[in-house]
Length: 105
Image (cartoon, rainbow, N blue to C red; front, side, top):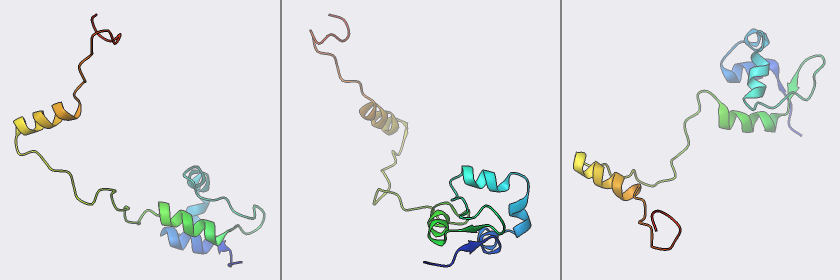
């Protein structure tokens, strides 16, 4: 088992002082944002290292955003008519068929 993360290390990794973490409601806000709760609530607080590493990897304020799912950005229409055509094709409502129960009979 890895060594636990102590308050001083956690504060340093977040870019703040330990006193910053002890300010009113600071830890509770971090817990609400998904930060793991400490393994010990009495005495010196210690967190599970693997849980904190995973949380920091996802939620660290200085972390880079993940890559987009698309390999390339979508094409950008060159003018208003091209935008209108793109929007009409994208959000076109299919015509209703007679007897399908939609629209006018």
